[in-house]
Image 1 (cartoon, rainbow, N blue to C red):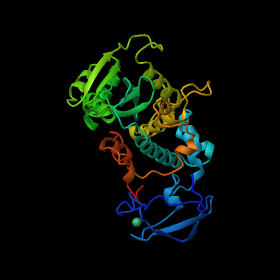
Image 2 (cartoon, helix red, strand yellow; image 1 turned 90 degrees about the vertical axis):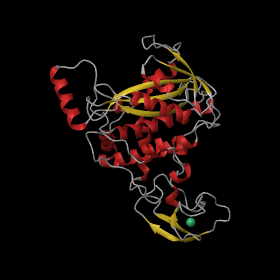
Image 3 (cartoon, helix red, strand yellow; image 1 turned 90 degrees about the horizontal axis):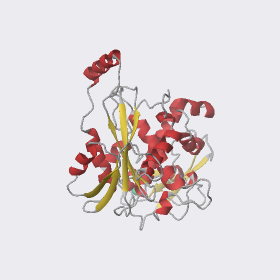
Image 4 (cartoon, protein in one colour; image 1 turned 180 degrees about the vertical axis):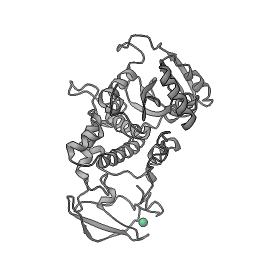
Length: 366
Ligand SMILES: [Zn+2]
């Protein structure tokens, strides 16, 4: 993950305001010695841009930039997919849970950029399948949906957005009183959230003007979401949620993804104490699963020559390893996320019960 300085060539000037940040033709930099650090490798080469004089190092371009325990990043990637809670992981690595939280958010941000950089650019050449994955944040009084969009043939996990929902379903008299009290103090989620966020998810995947076949269940908000997208054309096919969830079901790709999310993510298990305290954190964990699902996990783990969804779409020529995904740090100033996803990057998804949750400040192009 950390670049060895002997054969390392800085890919660009890391200063987003420098003209050599995006175009490196004619760029000149010089070596300005080393600095020592506790983690291996202990000697880090430093450089300086000859144009803007910004200094940087081999670490500036590493995903483990500024981490005290850089060696944890890769094993943590696997643990986040292996149904461990943050505190369980912290115990195993003998670090504080805060270290795991910080590195997990770092992995989430990296995967958000990675997914966006390597996504298909053209309109999907296959039908899409849409579904709402149910979970909750902070407590069961705050349910949420992740609206996932999956390729029907490739199983590529194109995109997701999130909605906070009002608690519904069967409740005792005490639970109803509690919900009323919470809504008076913390407000109520937008009742149109599903409609708006589903529209956002589809806009992130489908360019305007193209005709796309879309499969979903019979959720009443979906037709309203599609009607709101005037520049898009969808051929909407509805499969009732009550239909058997077999491989023959048109929604099979999304049902399978739901199972994988539930199977690998401790925060989405039923009756768990590892649920996400903040939706933002669940989003970061889901982006790690998204990159793993698309670029690393073969469709069948039993068959050796099985392809990943990204290979099926021709986005990659081989199945990636975690080390390859984490090889190079991606800079948000170069990947340029759409505004909706930039909110995820900056940790701007609010949790009503935690009004001052930590956000991500951009420091030195991070
Ligand atoms: Zn520069």
